[in-house]
Length: 191
Image (cartoon, rainbow, N blue to C red; front, top):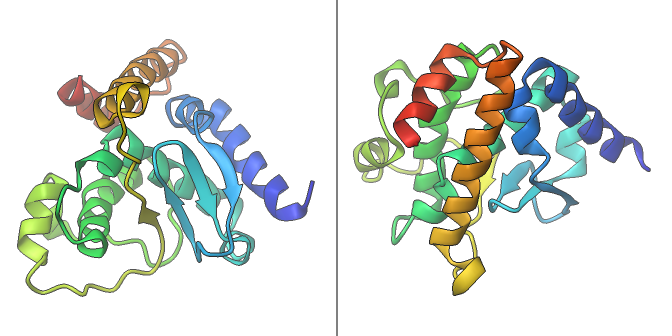
């Protein structure tokens, strides 16, 4: 196992103890090093990462990065884009989730998008506000659309699978007394 993969696995494993909600959900994502991915990304099935970016992060930042990609999945950002511009959609989603992660105590990689004017807004609301002025600086992270298919690969099936996983992970974290209040509120809204 190379040192980059070991760092990613170590971050994910640490989350199981420190942030079981996120750690449990991070286990759902297959780890895929991909040179085409300069930072990190998810499609709801995989955690894609660029090795160079990973080596530049501290362990707390890697845990924040994992939590960030997990939140994209929790909120079904990979199935909700529709006909929206991909880059602007990703920026809007980042503005929606990063404040929650910071409030939950995560340290995000440098350049994380966080603007108080967008706090407590959905990705759709933020997108509508920024799409005309895009491009916005994007420093890391991406969302790849879930491949649409039929049956078990449909967007609805992918969303249902994540909803079940979110409910189970929340229960695990709650039993351990480690479910941040802001995340618990968000989960209740989702479910």
